[in-house]
Image 1 (cartoon, rainbow, N blue to C red):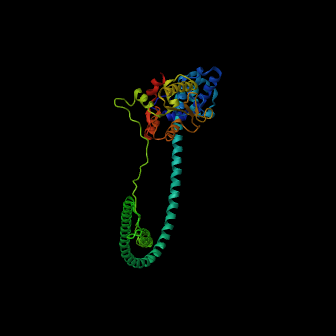
Image 2 (tube, rainbow, N blue to C red):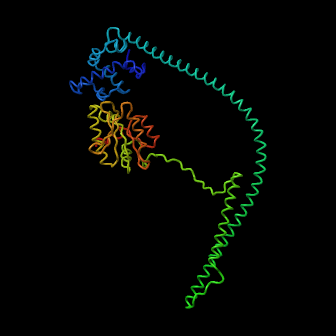
Image 3 (cartoon, rainbow, N blue to C red):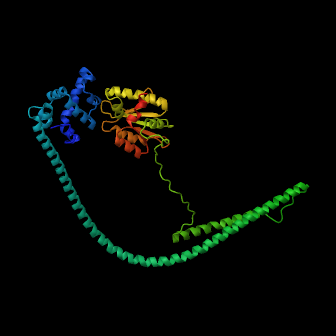
Length: 423
C-alpha cells in the first residue's frame, strides 16, 4: 500500500487512519529536540513541536516524515503497541514481512467501518426526523380541530361586526364632512391671523416713521390716536387663542376618520456603510510586490499577517521560534518604513497561547486560543478596524483571502510580500 499516492488515496482520509502513529511521531520528535536539539528533528515536523493538537498540515507533515525517515519510523515502532494504535497503523510503521498486502485489507476494513458508522448515524437521524414529523402531524391535527371551532365562533362575530361596520361607515362619512368644514374654518382663521400680524407690522412701522420725523423737527411726540398697539396686540393674542380649540377639534376628527394632519418628513433610508477595498493605481498588477508596497503606504493602513503561513514560505528551514523572531524583526522594519500598523497572528495552543502583546518595535503579536485558528481570528479582527482605515490581510490561504475580500479588505500573498520582508 503506497500511503503517499494521492492518485489512489484520499490523503486526508489516510491521515485519519494513521493518526495514532502520527501523534506518536511528534512525541518522539519532541523528545529528540529536548535531548539533541531541534536539528535532530525532521524538517517537516519542526513547526509542530509545540502544537498540542496536530492540525491537518501537521498530520500530513508527520505522515511524510515517517515515510521518508526510517530511523524515526523505527523509533515510533518501539514506542507503540498494536493494541493501542490498531493493526493497520502498526503494520505501516513496523513493516513486517508481507505488511503491504495485509495493510490493504486493514485499510479496506477501516473504510468499511467508517462507512458503517456514517450509515448508522444517518439511520438514527432519519428515525429522529420521522418521530418529530409524526409528533408535528399529530400536533397540527389537534390545532386544526381548535381552529375549526374558532372559525365557527368567528363567523358569528363577523356577522355582528358587519352590521357595526355599516353604522361606523355612516358615522365616518358624517365626520369627514365635519372635518372638511373645520379644515376650511382653520384655514380662514390662519389667514385672518396672518392679516392681523401684517397689519400690526405695517402700523408699527408707520408709527415709528412718524416718531422719527417729529424727533427731527424738535416737536414733541403726540400720543398715538389712530392705532392703539396694545389693543391691536391683544386682538392678535385673542385670534391665536381661538386656534387652540379649533386645532384640538380637528385632531379629534382626524383620529376618528383615520387621517394624519401633522406634517410628515420622509427621510431616505441610509444604507449601512461597508468597507471597500483600496484601489491600486493604473499599471500596478494586483499580485505584484509593487502592489503590496503601494497598499502598505496608504495612510492609516492596518495589516493582519497570517504568521505561520508567511514564515513557512519565507523561512521554511528555521525552527518555529526562530521563524517567529525573523518575521517579527522583518515586520518591525517594514512598519518603520511604511508607517502601517502591523498585527501578526499565530495558531496557538496551551503552551504558547497568550493575550495580544506588543513587541519592542510596536508590532502587535497574538496567539489564538487552542480551539481557534489564526485564519478565523484574522477575519474577525477586520471588523474591529474603523471603515476609514484601509485593511490589508497577508496570507496564501484561499479561505482567508476570499473571506478578507468579502469583508472589504485588500489581500497580499506571502511571496508577494517576501521581497519587502527581506530588504
